[in-house]
Image 1 (cartoon, each protein chain N blue to C red):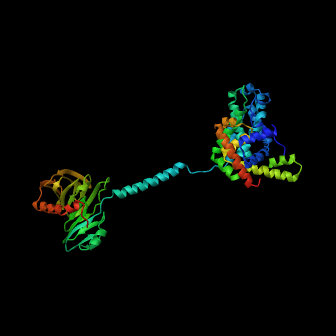
Image 2: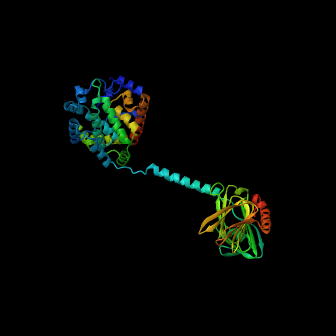
Image 3: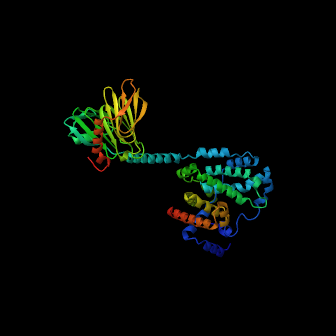
Length: 206
Length: 293
């Protein structure tokens, strides 16, 4: 397996959020809700937001609803954007808060326990297209499913930290800023999350 | 980052082998691409400003089954009611006054309790039957003294018919009523009666007392209330209501006629004074609450 960009150390030390908004988005235009600026903003952040929501909620349908909520909040709060700062932490904080709201709802809890994580045919499909060996594709697909399931079984506060750290590449201080925890608590949760995941995956034979 | 840097970073996080494996497994999973149609629609709504929360939220609510939990207030209310009911039961039990005891039975005759004839010598049967609300009728050659320790003693002369009253409560509900239908009744109250009220209802007169020794003598012409000690309020029963209430002091008697003649208050008859004094004396030990049947 090829090492990912995170393996090269990007998640540690330097933050992916440091610096200006990606792609030279016209944040002033976003503040004015200029359609072109909003389109660029959407293109820049939608995939990351959806990916985060999907991993936090473990359910595509819930992630779609949450994404709609997130972009509505962004649209409503666009005038609060600071053009001098990268909007990514703000966007990720909104997404995390929307997930927290959903987790608190009884409907989400029942749904998540009843259906677990949905099987991921899209993922399997994509993995298939990346690999030529059918056996390797099947193994990778099953592996991905087990990892997703284990992630979905993590308690939400632990899942939140591990997803922000591992998939969004955030530093502990950035996660602390988003979640409202202190850095030591974030580290502890991250460590506990990995420990629980490790046990779960070991039990699953991974 | 070099291999050495990576190792240093891992050491800084102090991850064990299982955690390392978990992290590697997480990183090996790529994100699932969103549904293209949904992405386009959301983008269009976001850019145009037509994005709305209600649509999405309603969908979430509609799709996710809602756990129907009984509101916690119901459980709390039920628990509170159960506790309150238990408390009421305990307090009511503790509030209950003493039972009736037969302190003396004179004569060779019988009494009837709720229609059941009982020999005066059969104390067990009397103890079983003499409960509050019981209808008692003494025969022409039977006399009965009943007592609630420290609270109240009642003497039923031969040929008396009355309903046994419930004891007044220890702390609340301290009012009791005795219904007399004929004959002679002598009543004396004890120290534990203090603060309670007794009402004796005869066919023609009503007597209200808060602590005294007195007799209620029901005759063909009317009812005579003789007060040996203390005070009693005596009135006429007219169509089920009290009328002509008057306070009768120690050593006085008031005669309430059945007909329209006005009630009369006079000196207590000597014969009755003696009987009441004897009754009061005979019940003294019971009124101190130290004796049992």
